[in-house]
Length: 140
Figure (cartoon, helix red, strand yellow):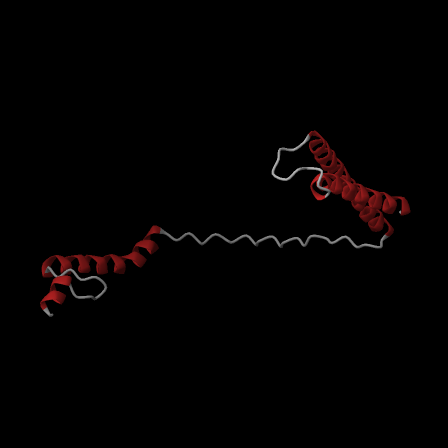
């Protein structure tokens, strides 16, 4: 356990050293402002970037190993994902006969037939009980 902790600290120090290498040319003034990067600046920057990436990967690996060791020792409880309850299957609606369906739809069909016949004779095309637009203008 101590070895893993020391490894995590060493990896974190390597990460910080890599970050320092990437910003050192700019922080120390060895890179002239508003100029193309010099060869030493390019070398330090990309070396630092590589060291920082390796250090970050090392930190992640050591932290994962420490977590695993703590779980094995029982010092850390692993959270279990709560399983969502399975939805209950919906029973299919009982199938009625076509005669029952026809008897249910007959009043609707008759009401629609009446509306169509009344609209054709009166010539008054109203929607939702509102007066026709021509009637509204005549009332003004």
